[in-house]
Image (cartoon, rainbow, N blue to C red; front, side):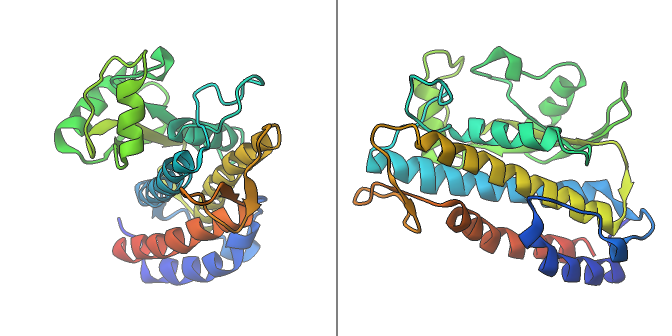
Length: 269
């Protein structure tokens, strides 16, 4: 089942007026309708937004930040370490915020070659990931134990910063990663197979709020640094020891994500 034209019109109008309220998603009384949007379509939308924010953070913050002299570490929240989160930990921070939201959406970041054993796959996840690894395509399934709708999307090494970090990590079980290789998967889960327009918007808003929370956590950590980068509208580079503020980072994310999300909605028609 695909999203109907009427669904798209309603969603597009709502998207235009709700993105500024992502930090506090609220029920939209005029957007209520029957639960007729497949959760698989929703999973595809949020997976694309996840890819966009990860690429932005990896390339523009971590990659360029290292050139500026900024540090990024797996123990970035340790008071004795002055560094920001690595890309996977940035998303883990976002996931922690998403998981506690009332929307009941969960995000799990896993790998078949995890640096941290707790990030490995278990049970049916192993079987589904093997399928994903062979096709490089997302896998959709209902968990046989919980009945939860689940979607597993490939996590590609889209930036050399990811490849280098994993290959050089002392605890990495694999040290010959190459760019664009599947390094793991992001797994989304939700209790319903169909959602309303209101639920669709709440899910997207919750995901974006998670990204905002993760980046704000990094900015908060920066305040403890001995040598603080300038926080404002500038992006880091070899010539600029700076970090974009929350509005600048999220604005760049939204400029890419908004069009991608609308295209995804249209392609689901």
